[in-house]
Amino acid sequence: MKIAVDAFGGDNAPRAVIEGCVAALNTYKDITIALCGDEESIKKELSSLTYDSSRVEIHHAPEVIGCDEQPTFAIRRKKNSSLVRAMELARDKEAECVVSAGSTGAVLAGATFIVRRIDGVKRPALGVVFPAEKGCVMVMDCGANVDCKPSYLMQFAVMASAYMKDVMDADNPRIGLLNNGAEAEKGNELTKAAYKLLETAPINFAGNCEARDILTGEFDAVICDGFAGNVVLKHTEGMASTLISMLKAELMADTRSKIGALLSKPAFRRFKKVMDYTEYGGAPLLGIDGGVIKAHGSSNAKAFTAAIGQARRLALCGINESIRSAIGQLPDIQD
Image 1 (tube, rainbow, N blue to C red):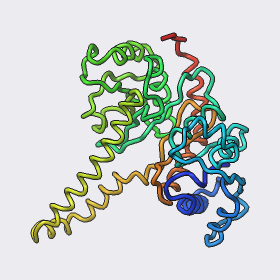
Image 2 (cartoon, rainbow, N blue to C red; image 1 turned 180 degrees about the vertical axis):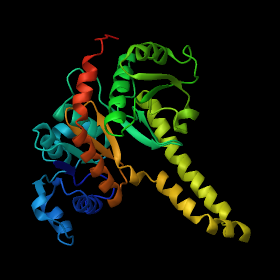
Image 3 (tube, rainbow, N blue to C red; image 1 turned 120 degrees about the horizontal axis):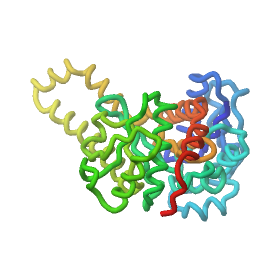
Image 4 (tube, helix red, strand yellow; image 1 turned 90 degrees about the horizontal axis):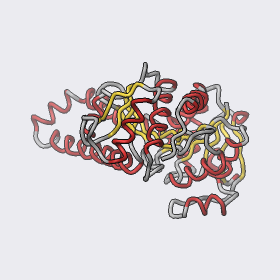
């Protein structure tokens, strides 16, 4: 199984990317990695690491797409960029999946214009998996489509259901629609129309989900437009970080609290691991005719290792066939 990696995408590239790739090679013996980027720089980083060189390919691509560039223009202009080369490997079926921590817009544009969508998919979508009180939950879309139509949300629901079932082993995934109330009549025009479509979709639709219920574990996936999903994503990241900082400050406030903190240290360590995004890898871009994992822009080596593991699971389960089949069952709605 070959996984193409954008070696120069992300804040900590290429060092963290390559260290993560080497760790993944040592963890997963059934993968090879195609590193895309400046060949000399990649070889320099690899020179200090121990790895099986027979399982590493280097595809020279000296250009880099920055986060400050207009995504579509950059994809078309920088044909020799590390991201474009990785996407081309997926397009040509030379790699089962692409992993990149580069610009979200560029990853979306590259996947859409180079790898292309699965037949019938109107818009690809980013799904982020959050730790929940019971298991985990996927929120989708988390930023790929700011403006959506009801039929998009129906397709997102079908794709999220396939992912949670095939990749995350959820039994008959419960799909919720993000809304400002649990009642069917609540919401704006988009969610009201989407609700009616989701009731008829070939999924286990569990009704509306209020924001406070996303992490309870009552839903396996929550569907929304990319604007709302990105707000949920950023708010949850910020809230988790703030709560941990506030708790740490209180535990260090006096001697009694410090003693309690010492006794509770194993529990806090487990909690921190559950909340650590580096354990989860990245966000799958579903609806693309090839695997694409968007890693966090600030990913360290550990996060890249997890992202590659996620790409491996995505390729092994053959989720695109499930998505293609499910999309084919939906009516062709013109909205």
